[in-house]
Length: 172
Image (cartoon, rainbow, N blue to C red; front, side, top):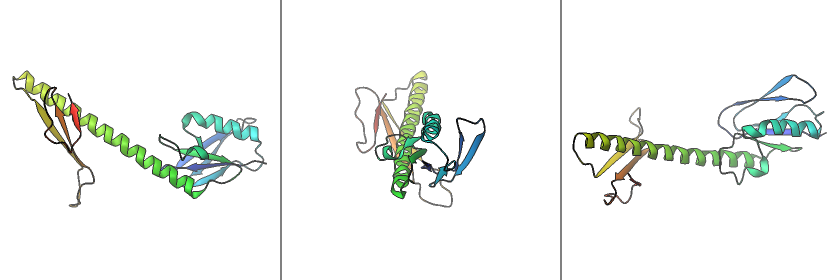
């Protein structure tokens, strides 16, 4: 009989809820971060496994072979009949780190752009032209540790030149 293995590529524990099609009983399998679990028992049929996978696909469950080429966050991945390799789970972790860093960077840029636009708008209302502005985002640190996030953004009015070529420039 086939087996379904599900791996948790996120850094949070996951409660995998599933239902065997012939029963109405919901079953639970706890999967710790970075681990995998065999779902159900050895009496699963391939049709039952496919139904469980189909139920979870809309929530991000992907086949193990798709992990290597994933461009979005991977929560859970699965394999039928054989456990997932450690390399697959670690690839999912690495992918998620990259995806989350990119998302955070875009959010910081968006916030900086909105802050600069708000300041420029307020200054224009009182009659002051703001041809360019800079915003620095620095992580709040505790215990005197150096910040791991320290980034500057420059917003430049149309027709103006950015002062800092090394920083991302946003045209407003």
